[in-house]
Length: 559
Image (spheres, rainbow, N blue to C red):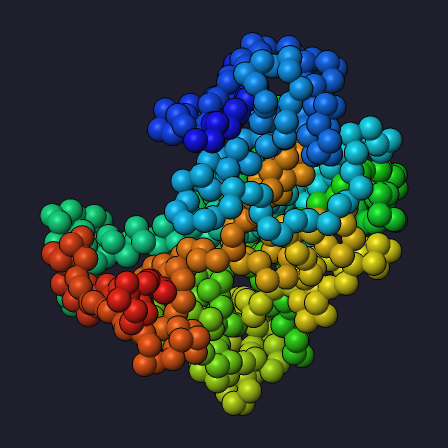
C-alpha cells in the first residue's frame, strides 16, 4: 500500500481563508487516512506568518516560481515528512488551489489532481519590481473595486482610478460604476415604487386595505398620487451613501483612490488627468481595465435631444409622456417602471423584444406590458426629433407617423468605454462593433494588462459576473490560485413589470444546438398565491419552462 501524501498548511490564526482550507483538509484526512496526512502550522499573528514565509525565506526553498511570490495566507505544500524543518517537496498553492485539489480528490474516475489546464501567459510580474504599484485598476465600478480590494487583501499595492465622463446631457455620478449610480440600483428601487403603486391599485381592496379615496362615479378605484421629485431625491441620497461607503472601503483596504482619467503611455505607464486638466504619470507591474460601457446614442436627425439610462434616474422633473426607443431589457425595464408610476409610455421597437432571450417568454412579457397600458410601435424607430412648444419633443417615425413626447429615452445597446484609454499604445485591439477588448482568461494581448466586466468581449453584462471575475482574477494574480471563472450557465433577471428570470439555454437556442427531436420542454402556467385574491390579476398567470435533453438522465439545458 502506498504511503499517504503529507500535506503541510501554514497561516495566521485569524485568517478566514487559512481556517477554511485547514478545516477542509482536516476533514479529508479523517475520511481518507490512508491517502493524506495533514500537518497544520498555526503561526499566530500575521506578522509572524509573513516573517516566516517571506523574511525567513521559506517560500524561496521551492523551485516553483509561484511559491517564490506567494505572500498570502494560507501556504500549502507537500512534504517528505511531518517536520516543517525538513526540505519541502512540492508547492500546492493558497486557499483556492487547495480547495480545487480537495475537489479533485473527491472526483470519481481518473480525474487528475492538478491545476487548471489552461494557464495565463506569464506577464513578467515579480515581487521585487520597481514600479509604483503592483496593480492599477482603471475603473471604479463593481468589478474593478472587487478586484482592487481583493488584491490589496493579499498584500498587493493597489491604486484604483475612477473618472466619470459626463453623458451628452451633462449627467455625472460618483464612485461605484454604472450599476450603482445609473443602473441596477436606481432601476430596482424605481421598479419597486411601480410595484407598490400597482399593488395598491390591484390588490389592496382584496386584502382589506383602504388607501386614499375612491372616485365618486364609475367603478371603485383607489386614487394614488406619485411624486417623482420625492422618489428621485430618496434614490439619489441612498446612492450617495453608497458612494461614500465605497470610498471608505477602499481606504480600509489601503487601496489608493485616484479621481483621474487614465490613458496608457506604454505597457507599464499610465498618464492620469484630473478634473482640472492636470496631468501626471504612474507606473505599475500589472493593470486591470474595468471601465464598463456607455449607452449607444440615437443616430438620427435631432438624436442629441434624446436622453439615455445615464440620465433618466436623476431628472429633476417627472419625465412625463415618454418614448422608450429599443427592445432591450434596459428599455423595457425603464418603460415598465415609468408606466407603473402612472406615466404615458410608448416603446419603439425595430424588430423583436428581448433578443437573445426565450421567444415565448419575451412575447408573454410584451403582452403583459401592453395590457398594463404601455403602447408599442413595432417595426418602427424615430427618424427625426425636433423641439416644439418649449421643451417638448416631436418625433417622426420611420412609418412617417408623428407624436409629441416630454422625454425620449434611447436604450438600443451599449459600447465599451475604451476610446480614450490609449490601447493603441500597448497593442491591444478591440472589437470595432462594440469597442470591447478581446481576452483569454481575462488577459489581453498585452500580458500584463487584464480586463473584467462589460468592457470584455463575450462577457455577460451583469454586475455579479464582473464582481466574481474581479475576485477570481485577483486570487490568480496575487494568491497563487489557478481556477478561472466559469462564464457558462449564469442566471439573469429582467425587472420588467412581470419579472423574468432565466439560466441556461432558451428553447430556441436548445433547438439550434441539439435539434428539436432531441429536447423535451416542460412548461406550466399557474396563478401565484399572492395574486389569488385580486380580481385585477385574473388576466395573466405566472409561467415556467424547463428544457431538457432526451437522454435517460434528462439533463437540464435551460430554465
